[in-house]
Length: 173
Image (cartoon, rainbow, N blue to C red; front, side, top):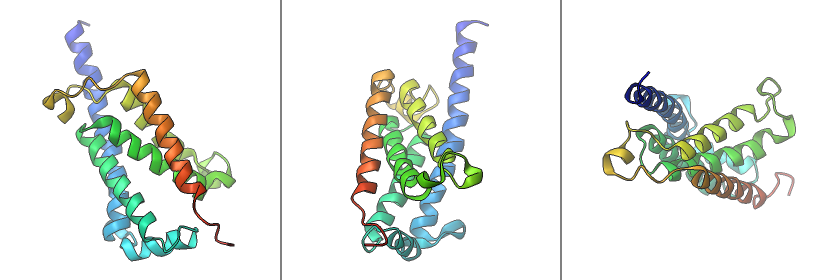
């Protein structure tokens, strides 16, 4: 296999991963904010977040839905990829802590397994970069990746997600 066909293989794999994960992730945001695809819309999602201790729930719904849409579409398009990964990591960290942490790891027990997968996918794309089939490459800004970028994006995303979780009130308060 020559270098060109190897590059095409990696870029094609990154493209498929980014599009499938990114579009699916963004659809959850459209559910939260607009009620599309059977979602609760802004008022329903705000009520759910209110029940989880996020004040009136509206700001949390906007942050979660907006993070899912921006992060998901950014990842799918390969646009400002590290920032898209940051949005995904922060959103999934909060989700893992609020909804899933007490249930352990496994999804079968309602654990944080899927949240963890999405954090790792986002961090991995921040490390590798979006590949040649991306808007970042088209715009000439695809060099903003690597282990350091991935580490910073992951740490900042986890810290911001944790901070959002830690500053909520418990439903018992």
